[in-house]
Length: 238
Image 1 (cartoon, rainbow, N blue to C red):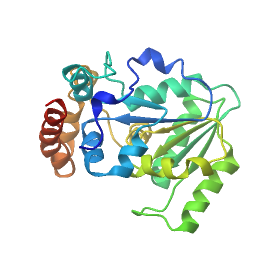
Image 2 (cartoon, helix red, strand yellow; image 1 turned 60 degrees about the vertical axis):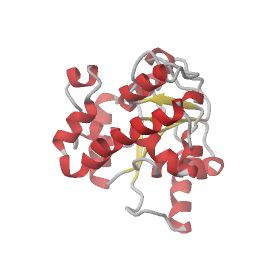
Image 3 (cartoon, rainbow, N blue to C red; image 1 turned 180 degrees about the vertical axis):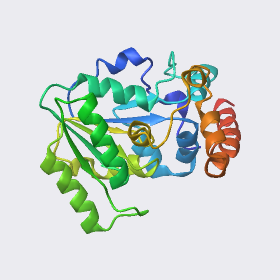
């Protein structure tokens, strides 16, 4: 079996987000989908085990309790929670960089961030939309990040691509800040995709809201994926 949830060290509460040390740190999230992918993708399983791993899914919180895991999160901590906490911890004059997504989404992010965080410098970079970058393309991304010298770096290329990219380029990144792989949060913040209403989030069924909104794109991930998650968790326990 690949990644084992019961052995992972997870952030256990939103309050912990406030106390992350200010240093170069890789921050990832894990949900049922990423857990499933990590069972068959060894590189992703390695990349996922960051300095801080956040339980972004009610299913992960439940499974940790059922498995009597090493970490037993008290609550689901969404990538959005990480994003807001980190942005609010930034200081006047500091630089936040968004790497990933399209020029359109990044322009909307920049516009909103200027209103929400007027004292911050916002830098963006839209990489080529492809499964794998060429050496030249990858070097250009690393150079752009190193030149910007951000005080906070967000990566938004969806899992598992974003986590693998950070993992494989970690030592090439000459920066001293938190690096968060937050995927869908780019679209949420830009307003191009709506988050589930708060009640759905509270009930732990934000995934169902996304499925209902985008059935053609999400049915396999959630209907098939949730069944696979239950199967994989059962294998891990027994």
